[in-house]
Amino acid sequence: MQGSRGRDLLVEVPPGTVVCDVGTEELVADLTEREQRILVARGGRGGRGNAAFATSTNQSPRLAEKGLPGQERWLRLELKLLADVGVVGVPNAGKSTLLSVVSAARPKIADYPFTTLHPNLGVVSLDDYTSFVLADIPGLIKGAHQGAGLGDKFLRHVERTRLLIHLLDGSSPHPLADLEQVNRELALFNEQLGAKPQIVVLNKMDLADARDRWPRVRDALGARGQEVMSISGITGEGVRELMARVAQMLAELPEPERAKPIKVFRPRPRDADREFTLTRRGEAWLVQGQGIERVAAQTDWRYHEALERFQRILDRWGISQALVEAGVAEGDTVYVGDLELIWQPFGEV
Image: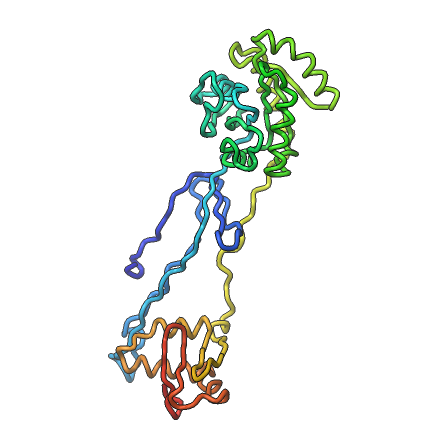
């Protein structure tokens, strides 16, 4: 508001926010960088004061324009975490424990399922030159892609990752079945998730049951050509080797392609503002066109000179002639946007 002194309305969102148009489902922006901005709605065009209409022969015109309302649209904002690697698995597989061991992140950890209610991020630093961002994704259960266990809220955060660590619970009686279940949910939510590179890791090797299951898991997955490792998040066994392998795979993977936003505002040809359509509705006439409707909305009808200016625009743009040729009669109602006019003879409204 307040003309050139008016300030833009800025809505701050965290990096990783995806902006979509609710009506069209089109992508408006994928905000992945700090300080990145996108214009999603323009303010209304301001009206001009009487000084803008002054001429050498009419230095104090009684004529002014009203401003136009700003653009309105409904947008959906969705946060997708920016992480290089996602840790997925069934509840209580030890994902949060692993994150706390390899990074400075301190997620809440306890010995029962569904401890993690929100994804957690941590930075893994192997040396002065090698680091990556690791995301702990809350446990996924059967039906997660449809929302079971809030799975649909969590799975979108995996979409940006380049690599997955699929953590298996070594204390589970059926770790291979757990693997198939989680992979199925990933693919059902998004086919590209199911195709992401994975390192399968059997956790809790500090437990006797996990050590007993390890040969069966290693041989079964090795026969499929699936890379598999074993660790203990509690004792740290195998954890550094796992992180080194993750860093190596990330270096070999191509950089991800960022989603490209659509053009939010498409420029119109200069003469497009003068385009209009004429429709008859009983004894009334409907004039539609972006340009003429804008002029009608900006015209301040308190001033006689404003009425005369509007009439000149109707004549100059060919709207008056089009009405006459279509058969407009004295007393007919002419609608231009929200404006209602009564047609008078001699082309005066």
